Image (cartoon, rainbow, N blue to C red; front, top):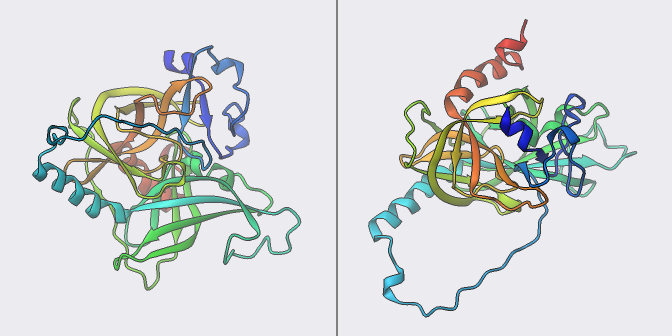
Length: 310
């Protein structure tokens, strides 16, 4: 509750449902008074546009700067190579209003504008994809048929393909959603699902996603805290969130947080930052995979969570 009072949730580049109008939809924008503070805001991490920040380091290169043993470096490279094919790039598109092709599945993007981007990961071999609800909220609440969602993924041969995706189910209370793409004749690689019940503060973790549209980006860090509470798109509280210092920025939303064995332990969702800044603060959050495992089967079968069926 304190976090909700001290932080505001800003959805970058996406639009949420009418029931969640208190959540910001774009940058620049206004933050609703009930969530405002003068200093800080909680930023959902799905967006396409931002500015570059360049840094430089002019100290002479020496052998002493190489601190990571080669074996550890090779292990990290292998981890990325094994897990990145399961991560997808999600584009939220909007057709031009008045288009005669509003009911047609887009073959290209020439008649559409990019509303935002995000990440996701392949759940099974049937083409189900896990992502955050706020990544596809505009599509989920589209009443006029102008929204589209395209997913870029990699097949078993390492070839990049683009597919139109449809929503199968959503749960705004946990900021989770399931998409489905047609993969007939295409072999894909689902993620390896781990558990979050045995996580320990200090253990290594890795985030893979598409920050600011840069596909297949790997960031590294540790589990910084457990049992955190963050606000959901519908105003509820998501309990038990994982805190990490692995960099999570706009566009990482919906991507996997992975342990050192390559198992998914969470869904990257938000970063806590000073109000008015879209930069990652190093205080980032993921929805624990145990929550995802309990929720996703109901979304696939019923389109909604168990608690919302009655």
